[in-house]
Amino acid sequence: MISKRLSIVASFVPQGAVLLDVGSDHAYLPIELVESGKIERAIAGEVVVGPYQSAVKNVETHGLVDKIQVRLANGLAAFEETDQVSTITIAGMGGRLIATILEEGLDKLSSVNRLILQPNNREDELRVWLQAHGLQIVAESILEEAGKYYEIIVVEAGTMKLSASEVRFGPFLLQEISPVFVEKWQKEAGKLEYALDQIPEKNLAERQILIDKIQAIKEVLHASK
Ligand code: SAM
Image (cartoon, rainbow, N blue to C red; front, side, top):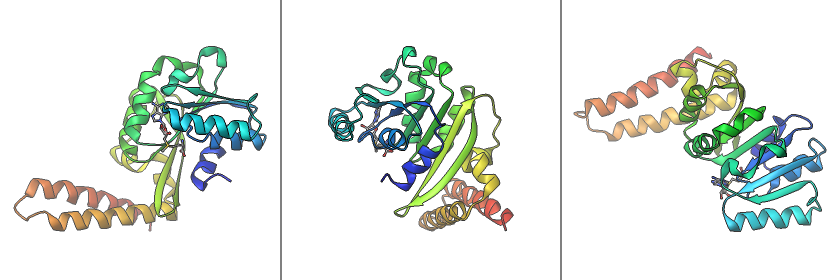
C-alpha cells in the first residue's frame, strides 16, 4: 500500500503511460502503477546509491525487473528519447530542486506529455518557473497526511499567465477552496501572526511583509465563505 500522497500522484498518471519517476527511492510509485495495471513499463531514476539499491531490491522482490528499469542517474538524465517516456513524476522534494531538475533537462521535455510534480515546499517558486518555461498547470490537488500538507501540480505544454494570488495559492486550488486548503492556510496565517508578534514594532518594513502575507491569506479565506 502506498501513501495517500503517492496514490494521488498516481491518480494523475494517464492509463498506458510510459513513466519516469525521478527520485524513486523505493520505486513504490512505479511498482504500484504496474501492479495495478495502469501502466506497463516504467523507469525509476535515483541519484543516490543507497535509495537506488532499495529501489532495485524492491523491483526484484515484486518480480517486475522486465517492466521497471531502475537507473542510477541525476534527474532527467535517467531517460533517452528512445525510451519514449510520456509522463514524468517528481515527488517529495523541494520546489526549487524540482525546478532545477526540470531546467537541467529542459531539452528533453518536448517529447513528454505530462509532468506530475509534488513539491514539499516553495510551490510558488515552482509555479513561476513553470510559467516562464512554456508549461501550463492543468490540474492541482491538495492533501493532508500525518499532519503535513502537500500540493500536487499537474503540468503539460502550454502557456499560462498566473496572478500573484494564483502563484501563491495555486490556480486550481484557489478555484476549488477545499476544506484541506482552508485548513492549510488558516494554520499558515496563525504561524505568520505568531512570527509577526515576535518582530519589534520599530521594524516596520519587516512587519509589513508579514502583514501583507497574512492579509492575502485572509482575503482568500474570506472570499470562500
Ligand atoms: N519520490 C519518493 C516519494 O515521493 O516518496 C521519494 C522522495 S525522497 C524524499 C527524495 C528522493 O529523491 C531521494 O531518494 C533523493 O536521493 C532523490 N533525489 C534527489 N535529487 C535527485 C535528482 N537530481 N535525481 C534523482 N533523484 C534525486
